[in-house]
Every structure is written in C-alpha cells, then in structure tokens.
Length: 336
Image (cartoon, rainbow, N blue to C red; front, side, top):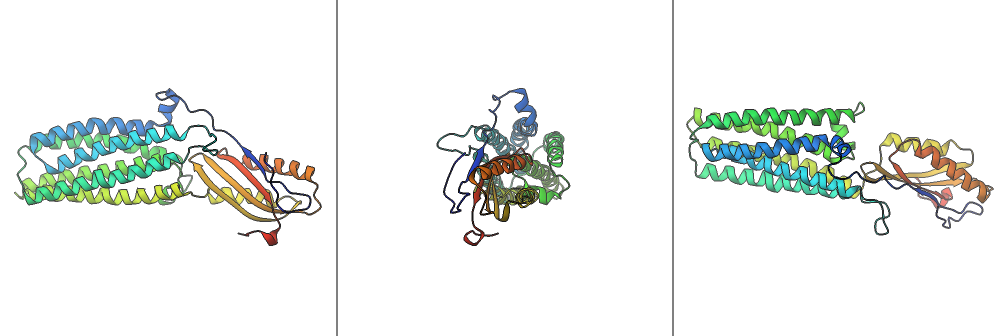
C-alpha cells in the first residue's frame, strides 16, 4: 500500500497492489520448451535449412538459393534473440525497474524487425541486383529443387505450429485484429517470418525454373530482388507493431470496460474519471484509476472499499499485476 494526498476531506489515499511475477524457469526447462515450442521449432528448422540452401547455392550457382540461405540464417538469429528477450523479460522487479522487465521483449522484437529489413531484405536485394548485372547460368538446378522441396516441408511444419498457437489466442478476432491487439510479439513474428519464408521458397523455385526455361540468368536475380521486397514488407509491418508495444499499449478494450464497470457499480463512487492501462509485458498490465468518492466516506471505510475493488478487478484477469486507485474530485480531474 502507498499513501498520497488527493485533495478530498476524508478519502485521501492512493491505494496500490503490486504482484511480483513467478520466477522464470531455467533455460532448457521442459515447461519453457513446451511454452516456446513455436520458437524452438522454427529455430531448428531454419538452422538446418540454411545449411542446405548454402550448399545447394554453392553447387548450383543460384542467386535466389543463396538469398534463401541468408533468409534462413537471419531467421535463425531472430529466434535466438526472441528466446533471449523472453528470458530477460521474466526477471523479477527490482529497485531500478519496479514494474519489471517485461518490455525488454518488445525491444528485442523491434531489433528482430530491423534485422529482417537489413539482414534479410537488404542482402537479398543487393544479391539480386548484383546477379542481374553479372548473370551466370545455374549449372545444376536439380539439387536446388530438392532442397527447396525439403525446406518447404520443414517451413510448412513450423508455419502450421505457429498458426495453431496463434489461432488458440485469437478468441474470435480476425487475423489482423489479433495481430494488432496481440501483446506477445514472438507469436506473430514467427507466423509472419514463416509465411514470408514459404512465399520466398515459391519465388526462388520459380526464379530458378524461369532462368533455365527462358535461358535468361537475370530472372534468377530478379527472384532474389522480389524475395527481398517481400521481406522488407514484413519487416516494416513487424517494426510498426513492435514500436507500438515498446512505446506502451493499453489493455484490451473489453478488459478496460470491465474495470470501469467494477468501479461504477459501487454506491460510494459518484464518478469514474478515467481508467488507464498499459502493458508492461505480454502478461502484465498496469492499471491506474481516478474516481470521485462520496465526500462523507471515512478513511477506514475507503481503504476497505478500495481493497475490495482491487480484489474484484484482479479476479478479472491474471495479467493485472498493479492497480492504483486515486480518489479525485471530478471537477479537478481529467475525464475520459
């Protein structure tokens, strides 16, 4: 609990509760692996695929295949960064960060978006342009087709896992709504990465085929440029979503409405001035409420009432970790 003057004659406290998150499981713990099965699955697939693509590119001489190898290598690094970010974000609050480290995951998600743009899209476009300027025919496309087929099967499996996990949390929302409202970046980042990877594999295969069929090696380079543009579009989308989370996004509107209803349903509260929320992590929501209490409410009863309200609000969602209720005259408050 914490006390602070609010300017009311009898009710002059800002009441707060803060719940520390449970300790994070050790790296490699079975529960952590199960929770992050999408990330671990994508990491394993991308590492194996990257090696195979580079071998095929070295033997066959395909620019699109080399680009795909870089793509898989960048994706592997991204999964490592997201796993690292998740681990760091689970650290318990301390004096320097009293609300925890949850937003560190959002920082690493933003870094991943930058890497996709620079390391994936940038290199792909550069490689494609270089191949268009100095084209050379693909010596043996057979190995490239085999590797692309295996990669498509592995990426498809990873994509299916990502879709299953993402659908489990959509709760009837459209895909776009679920992405916009999601507060857990790894879920939608892996989904978009895998989707881009599948599209890239199809483009690479078409580029290899077209360069041989039409006898123009520049088409293989054009495929690399097109893959780069796909990655750039995905990177911009992910950067936009990650930036919003990093700055601070409100909780789900339905939860905010429920919080307001808890406050408005009590006779001792004449007005709810505002209900403000912000995600301090994927599973942590900070709640700050300003409300006008009846003037003749004694301090002791106010404390009991606020504790009761906090208990009811925390029961709405396990993500609510901190609640601050500020008694404030409506005419003196900023009303939303």
